[in-house]
Image (cartoon, rainbow over all chains, first blue to last red):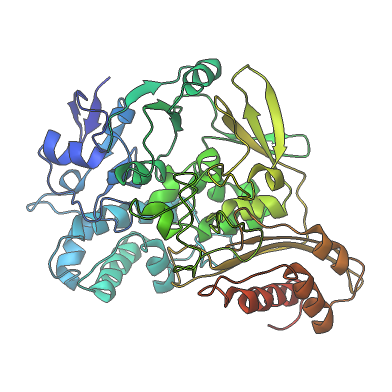
Length: 166
Length: 327
């Protein structure tokens, strides 16, 4: 079975060692997803797998026939940006931009997780409904590193979209 | 990464047969295994993908729950039954890694995650766990994250996980499907091993074994806490962690189930400490006594000497909080 990436089907005829990240970048030409550490520590490679955020560097492409992947290219375009993309621009949520696709894919899934009622380690009541505070956003985005240190603007951009969606 | 054969298991029996082969390893979430394969710390000749086996779902099991081995850490921590009745487990899972990793990491795979000892990861260094018989560069080296309890002259590595620490406090059981089709139940407290002179074996799994699930006993109630002390506020392994399930009745500790992370080659559980606390009224002196007993065989390795007082203080803080005292 093929893998579906941003709505288009792709054949998975690759060396089994190929990470999903390398398949996206070199097999599909989707270079929006970035390779940072290649060890699941930086989050630059974050994509949505069947709607959930994952590190695409830490999974093999061959494991994903029949799955659906959304990358930054599938979230928005320069003419029709995703609300998070527009908010990152408005709030200057980056300097070099290398971590940004991962940050935005991660934030998209994070807002979905909150909507689904998932709590985090900093939630006061692990069994209750989550409330998205700045502390919560920081904890929930801790898998995405920004070496330029644009964190406060990233948090502001995400908080604005969260409020607009609430 | 070294080349390997990619195989997909189509049933439990099939998985067992594929996994008895020399050099074969199962892959589920892969977040730890692929990291180690990229570094060539792990060099399986065959990867058996178990992701399509019917091992998902959290289902009632007696008075407790059965968590399928392929239930992701995220799904487990988000389950209302886990959050409501086993909050120590939800908290412990949420204390580990990141949302991205927890979406991929599985219940079975997380139990099998390997140590983060720097020397285990560094192929230029001697490591009895990676390459038996080569020695242990951590002894006398940089050993800030290493064991203070249960270590051996061959290995001072720690088990790095959080989830298993809570499972140990809850006295959960690992369900294992053997290569011959047999099923066995191993208490989480006996699943991981102390290093002894065979540190290459992290746990009691045999070739061809597949973890099929984890069984939680009836909800224990009480006050359930998971406290983790680490170098960063998020996304860092525990220097010390404590999972606690404590019942207080009429001002007396009726029961205290305690397990510790970051201290040893396995989640540490010491029934002597629980027995000492039971039937006693909470007090600072009692908690001091409990900590002293927990740490009576503790031995620092130099850079990790601080873990001994840190463990004492963390245990006392948890016991104070669990018994309604001030921190």
